[in-house]
Amino acid sequence: MSQIKNLLLLCCLLLFTGCGNPITKDNYSEIKTGMTIDEVESILGTGTEQASSDASFGGISIDMKSMVWQDEEKIISITFSHDKVQSKSQIGL
Image 1 (spheres, rainbow, N blue to C red):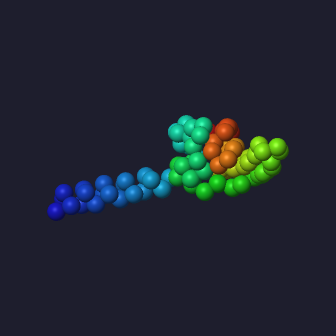
Image 2 (cartoon, rainbow, N blue to C red):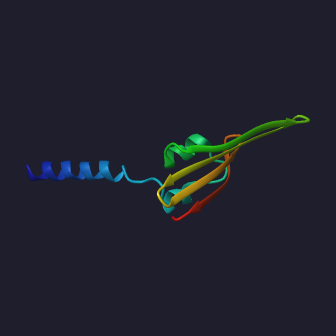
Image 3 (cartoon, rainbow, N blue to C red):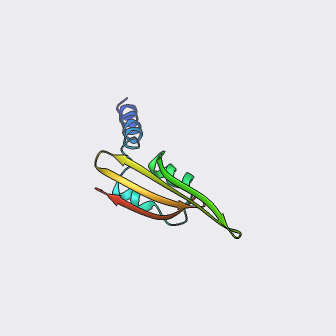
């Protein structure tokens, strides 16, 4: 019976440790240039779009989007070009 209790406790701990704040330095470090928005959101959760632009000039298209993930003083900002990470920055991590 004690082994069952220990197993249940371990399962609960594993479930709850995955529910923490995703705005961390470790998660920020996982974000790499070229990742898709879906890949980033699988790490950080759903972000907030801050700005976007879409234009074409002589057959060259520009598609930029800026998104932010924020928790109080911690901020992760990522710029996407054609839905892939172009650059990233952080404050307070």
